[in-house]
Amino acid sequence: MRTIIAGLLLLVGLVLIGSSVWEITDVVKEQDKAMEEATKTIKETKEKVSRDTFQPLENQTIGILRIPKIDAQLPIVEGTSPEDLKKGVGHYKTTGFPGDGKQILLSGHRDTVFRKFGELKKGDEFIVELPYGTFRYKMDTARIVPADDTSVIGSVQDEVLNLSTCYPFRFIGSAPDRYIIYAYPSEKQS
Image (cartoon, rainbow, N blue to C red; front, side, top):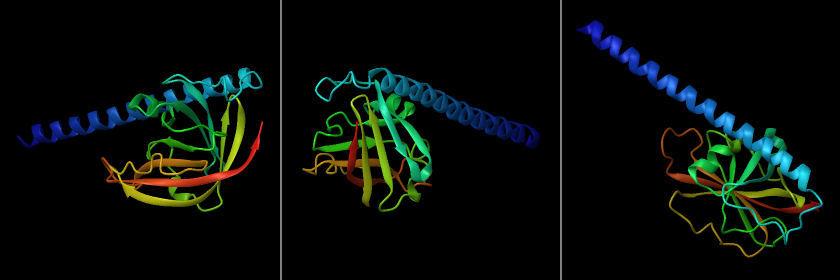
């Protein structure tokens, strides 16, 4: 009987490890594909697209978020559905885009794209590349809010890049809080 129980536990462990490896591999594959799409889109449309004509479709890969401090280059996807966040960083569709003078909200998973978020400090740079330009932001502050606190969305009047992920960073399961970064424009390059 002990041999059967030990065998079942071993089998369950192997299945859990196998499914985790498959999930990680799938996420990496989706992010790589989205990064290729983002790079191609920016390269092919630069100088052909203005902010006025930039109207991304839901689930479309629209740009690249670069975070030099943590050596991250992440695809930005229009939308924040589970499928969108599997591809990269999701743009919350009811918020603005760089240059609009409004809040821009980008979200990502703490265990994939924003894995090293805890290393970021005031003054760190975020670079957002879109088909109509390159925009630079500097981190000012960060705050932790409950997971169900949606007051962050639309709570600012000036242009601010908010980046959001689950918190605590090393929490296993559904995290109770969100970590929000506030970054403000430092300059725009076309």
